[in-house]
Image (tube, rainbow, N blue to C red; front, side, top):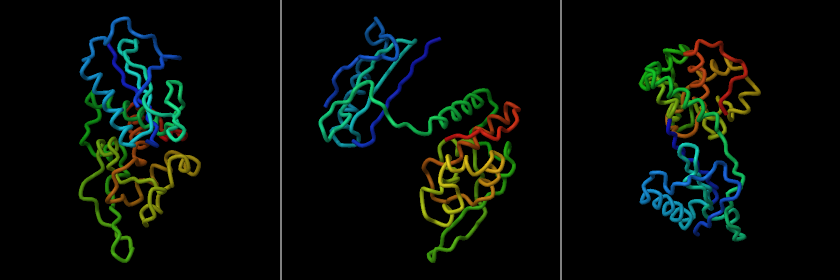
Length: 236
């Protein structure tokens, strides 16, 4: 079975690259390109060069593999731009929310099997989310609750358009009703308690950023597996 993967680590603090193939995570392919379009591979280099030149990122490390063999493994830009230190392939990046990827891939697997339609309301599996309210803030800063026009769907959980916000991402009355983030919530609540807490809160009407809904998505996958809800299951 052929597998192709693209892994990019980005230093979001904003050259050209110099090849550094030390400590490669996989062996390199003996066949240059491995069937990849050379024009497309060149566009990858151009993209990173342009982003670095525009100060949209300091640097990155890119690995592209096919069938377990590397086609690309190289650094771009700077590890420390202020001191003109180039990026290296063994640089350590601070990544977060990696369990969100796992939960979403699990959900997409159920989607492929026809068990988790993207436009289905999540209340089909989590009934406490059936009648959600939207929190609207008026000109005087008061919170008004109105019935949601549309239910939260599976797709909303995947693309972070569900309004189940991180409390630490704002200072509105709606934000103050939510935990600051996944880690504080994991300390404060057991899984079922947190699920009920999310369902009882009004959803934020204007949010489209990383949200708490991916944890609910993971619980839905457990429900499809007919597994008991684990008190310690969290998506961070």
